[in-house]
Image (cartoon, rainbow, N blue to C red; front, side):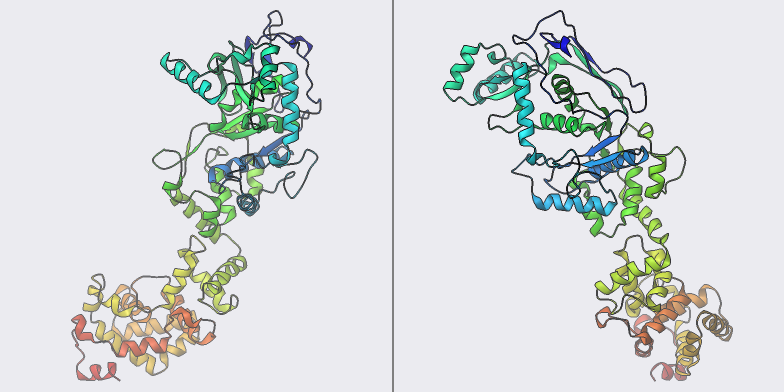
Length: 571
């Protein structure tokens, strides 16, 4: 690096990657020209930059809100890349925005990452060799490196006021030029600087940017990306209040934490230009960069709150499983090259490759996520699914016990109608309810009512009063099947003309889960003692009592069986 002394930066580029984990240097210099007045001396620590051959990646959220699904996907891709290459996954908290950063937000983010199963090797709560892992605890380190750059001549003190800077911006706009810094402090004399220091004039640290040249990087997802340096201008790395700016902090952190690959959202791509210049000035080796596409809404705009739930915490509360969230997020911009859409975390680790990450935007489809969650939910072992649903039903006041045979049988019967854990509430409540009168009054029910429903109701009441139906239900599925078969023969009905009115009269609904299983479970619900009084459950006795009291005339039912049948229903 000795050749850096007094050199301008005419062309800046990253050399192509030669090995999967080789680290690329970013800048080539022309040592024959002079830019800086001061001699260059690199004071940066030698213990910075990637460790040869070791994969070290980081996820660095700002605790200023909830963990967005975009951030969660970035964390997931970093995690998978680390695990698939035997590397380390680092969590770093970028909390330098003191006004907006909160401890509550940080804790919520950590909980969401743990819920997703993205355990970190270094970071808060874990520690590590290259900590601390909160930017707010690394201020002295930033100031040390800022002073190094000041001493080396890569940065200078800028005493421009806000008014002066605003005038420069306005002047650039008038001339249709980029709003780059053109102030005098880049070339100020020592006397001018000392004079301002003597007056205690506030100042920032500005980084000297070459006036010409091109910076190129070979992004692992996007290929070659380049910027012209004459559009940048000298930029601030340390504010007048002593607070370091984002790009400076990130560069120092990534280098001193020995990060080998920076995998982040494409909205950070423009930051790479400033960061690359800082890497070089401090003598750090650049990591490899991979900029992941944004997650888009169905209208292909950037996904935001106006499109509905966007944070991991929201989806967690809504009843999504972590394994379904991980599976779906992995598919937003990545695929293994097959038609397979279902992956466990272990399978993702085995198959993940950054080369298969797509650079085009990925559309977030909440309908597909819900469907995928249902697939994962129903694929759970029956014991685990029963435990999840039982605990949910008890917590929602539907059951007084979260275990037992009723829960197991209800889970098996109802699971096909459950995509989210929270769906279980309505599904069980629906089974336990008996909205007979409202169903009878519906237009959809009219054909069923007109198909001699009164006659079938009369026969059904007779079977219940005689104990015949209850004996069949006690015998389970076989008993129910035999009874239904004989009942149909007696009435000369079969198929839809038999099952539709039976479902209506016994469940109060025209549609639902398998009818035999539903009736048997309703029967058991009335005798097992696990149904909560808050569940608005109607037992079979209560259902038949309501059936007797139906005012059939209100539904234009033709009583074709005569006075005896009327008397039966009124019993």
